[in-house]
Amino acid sequence: MGELTRIVPFEMVDAALAETGAVQQRLRKIPARVVVYLLLAAALFDDCGYLAVWRKLTASLEAIPVANVTGTALWHARTRLGARPMQALFDLLRGPATAIRTAGAHFKGLLTVAIDGTCLDVPDSPLHRARLGGITNQYGTSGYPQICLTALVACGTRAVLDAAFGPRTSGETVYGTRLTRSLHAGMIVLLDRGFSGNPFLTAVAGTEAAFLARISAARRPPVLERFEDGSHLSRFGGLEVRIIECEITIITSQGRTTGLYRMATSLLDHHRYPASDLVSLYHERWEVESAYFAIKKSMLGRRVLRSQTCAGISQEVYALLSAYQALRIAIADATGTTPGADPDRGSFSVALRCARDQIVRAAGIIADTAIDLVGTIGRAVLDQLMPARRLRVSPRAVKRPLSRYAYKSLRVDRHTHTATLNIKILTPTPTS
Image (cartoon, rainbow, N blue to C red; front, side):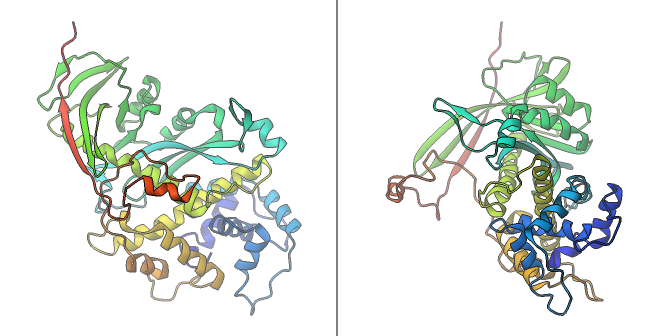
């Protein structure tokens, strides 16, 4: 894994293998430890088959005898390993990858995290269709079978704290409930409307983590007490919450758009957590979308997963999450050495390209006597820091038109696109 081997060292891989009983019982041409690194490398080279990834891993090892393997041998090695060692490795890697001083990671002392779901395409085989089904519309069943991936992401670093996945038919709230095992006091969880049901919010509150969730505008919770910041006390079943109603206006070169939003939070102290601060904080929920973009676009290139079996899909997803987490740790470590550097400014694409180069060159696997906390990947990230984040808005426009000439009709210069955001806290009208 090149320099990423320092983040995923041999001892960590061996611990995951030992924990799951996956250490080979006899000497093999492809040991279990090597298979783990092959799977991690394959997550970084989305456009290659496993045999091509093997050749990249061994390209710079001319001085070392390397086994001559076939694609079939690699398939048998991956099948013997199974998914549990990769899950155990992800459990060792997952976490916020942040410190208390990391810019943008905390809100008034609370670690800011978000839960959301996305879908990943899997190969269109009879086995996957039988287990996962397909996308149905008025024309019948179409598209690839999909799995639903739901992740708990640290907004400050976009690192993954936990993840759960399975058939899309179960829904993201089912997998989101499993993620409550990783919630605890000292966190604030940002949730969209899909996770705003009473059972899920009650489960989150039971972990002692705070939450801030957007709720449907059609939902009219009772007003029990009004606060001076414009919010009011209410109740969802047996759970006390504060309700914040606001009007958000976005002004761009395309005009003005105004929307009404209603949010619920378990932070009842309106003096310490004013409504305006919470509304501004909710914008950080977009960081989980950025994490999914890095996984699906930068790493996968919007491609379908490789594996033809259900166990192989699980193995591949855990390898994908582990490789993603290793890159996020590298970015967080690098930006942590520069005062005031926000991990948001660290380019995931730069880290990914540099990590690929390190793998092919087999460089940086063994650390020198003087430990370099930044490393080659970190220096590449710091040398190409992105500018400070502009206000994130998503104007209604076709991002991928059928004709390239259709871009002219958008009349939006995406290189200089700016926006202004106005927030107005609303006071609810009394209900009889």
